[in-house]
Image 1 (cartoon, rainbow, N blue to C red):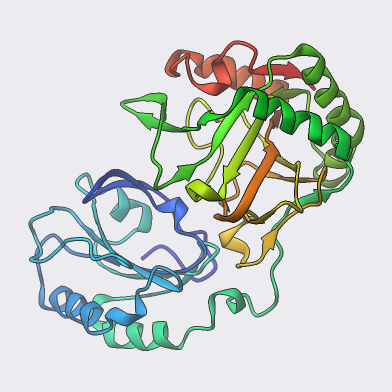
Image 2: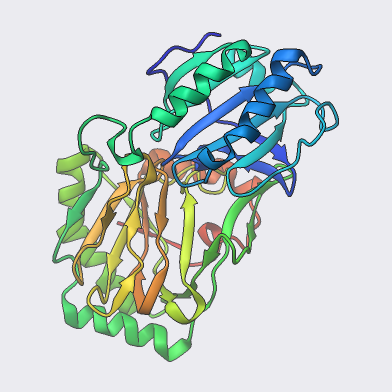
Length: 356
């Protein structure tokens, strides 16, 4: 196996029962036991699967999960997803085997999606023992972890936050989708098991100018100072609402994984009513279980490459202003990829972009 402890675990997308494009980059925040299985059910492979079932309680999808990687859906009896915690991926073209440099073996990945250890299939007993003895997820690094985010208070004043909330309520939000690659094109899809949120795009030019001016004066200098990045473009003038009545959430995802979103560099989440709801905080699973909630009018800024989620709102409503920032290099990428994007998708909808 080419990988050694500390190496980034290669991420990939592969078919799985019930999901034709399972994205392994979304599984951060837990230990991942990846079993690369040979093309035929050899005795070590059969024993490995038996050991997974004997240790079923380990794989709860919270602390640990198991992925069996096979080249043929029919090669192993019982190769069906058993949720929570046990999933199968079909590596028909051998892509995963090439990425990992092995036709068979164990790869155990830490919650930040880096290789923890590897082992051959005939050492499955030792693998299960090590899995059972691992530190709690939040202690996997040996020290407390903090996501590489910028928290910036006082970007919007409370009165302006109220104006944006009123603008949302005057229109009423529509269910929000998310971007996905299908047949080589970026399209908007909906899945309430993945995202439950309603959005309003601010059309009033005065409000748009006011929001942009505050971000330009108050936030962009902090981003340049913290990340040495000079944003020149802003995408979306969008007020979002996560409502406890519908269980508002957004499951772990990254914001730049499609052609239609590859230009995005930083995501901005400005809370408009931080004191008015329970739950609904940001979490970055690869950096532990702690959550992040800026005060009303404050922003969290983070790289679009970071895995993140909006935790469920359990009481009240969370309103937030949610733009993306990028630069002139990103603008060129956006223009180049436009031919591969459904023009109804949010980044390409008329009025979806402005100079920052």
